[in-house]
Length: 112
Length: 109
Image (cartoon, rainbow over all chains, first blue to last red; front, side, top):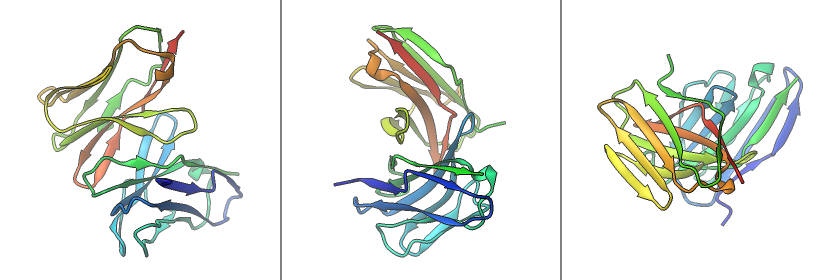
């Protein structure tokens, strides 16, 4: 039982490149979400999903896309990376929207 | 103004001391209140979860919620070096969590 698995753990991109951050869970949780964590800013919600086929924007969605084709996977796509997207990204899941969240161990992204 | 305010610290205490952490909030719609612990280079893990005013105890941890003052606290009794981490308060309404910026705590042996 792995819980929430995020890949890769580290990534360096050049400005303008695109990439996909992967998140997979084996807890059969309906709710999945992406956060970014920046010093002094706390965790900020990027996008979330309440079930397969359903996604919605969070607090800071610009520059990111998501899709949810299965219960298990919730990838986050950076369309054209910018230095402002340098951050630590966390995927978090919950049994349902109001349940406590389980976090992965993060992807540390640097955009140069 | 942020919805959730948390003193970033850092806080350094000797082993065995009581650690007191606080958050204030401005949104009256918050219904659920949580504390997460985050070790370096790890994801946050849930410590305490409550939805009512008052105190909730779990071992050495006590969470306190005062909805009338929009104030929550976490107390750690008999602190241990293994409690050294960043503590995040979080509050929830509908589908979204709002987090404090986190307080970094170091417990000195």
